Image (cartoon, rainbow, N blue to C red):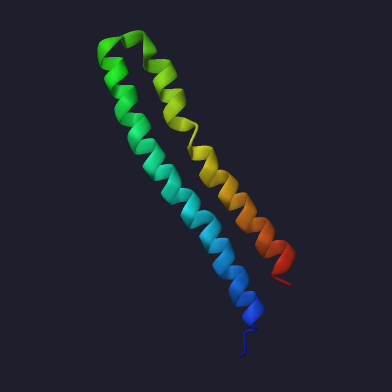
Length: 77
């Protein structure tokens, strides 16, 4: 069984799209979560906004997954 170098590079690119997006999201969520919980400790009415701000960076992982899927579908032929 032979695999072309192009397909391997496509797979690496797709993995990097998801992996680096997840890494950036993890770093962002750790900082946002700490700040949000500090704000909630001072003012309880900020809980809804804090949850929203923690969830927003997660869209980066979804975008990375979408890019990876497009790369595999369009270039992985």
